[in-house]
Image 1 (cartoon, one colour):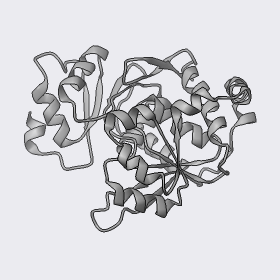
Image 2 (cartoon, rainbow, N blue to C red; image 1 turned 60 degrees about the vertical axis):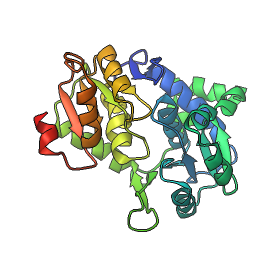
Image 3 (cartoon, rainbow, N blue to C red; image 1 turned 45 degrees about the horizontal axis):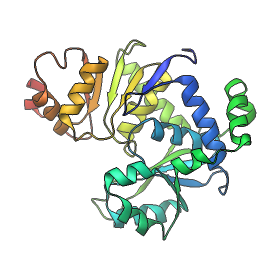
Length: 284
């Protein structure tokens, strides 16, 4: 609808990715990740917000696997519970993410329960067949990809575990598309919009509104790996001329206070979720 050359994702390092880039990465990575798994299998995804998380989510889905989005901030006990609940035997992550986040001890523990697959290793070992799948899939995706029923499971998310062990929540392909269409019906959104998303893909808000909705509606999304960097987030909102930011009451207040006059002048919508919006934040 919007053309393969259109920039749709700006990554955490400000690299621009077009729809063709996302498609190529999705199909090649999905072809590689399907080895050692079976159709319908739940595969763990432990990645921060960014092009890598988007492509991995789509790559698993494209070949009929079900991404189980793991909350890497939840702690070891909650993650072990999530792996058991979703029967996850394989986790896709990235060496750079593990290193920067200091998650190696966590990965060492989880590796006793599931195989750890690093995106860097997969990219280095892409076969000719994987690359051929990407080339063919750009023109004939139906010949390469799976054809799941709309009501089949598309993703597994997990509750925070505040009332005991985290619960697995299965959302269908129809659920995800319906959520996007509900947002489109509620808000005026335009292909000229630029959405800034600092929210994690392991939460429904960050996944559907922050990651999938922009791709489906032709809105450029600027990805940020954490909501905890107000000054850097304000700088990137200004740099990329973001018109929409998705966040929570707690974080959006921090961004507003960190901004100098004019830094947030391009924003026309601030979409807050996940917690109650305070009167003070609304007024500010």
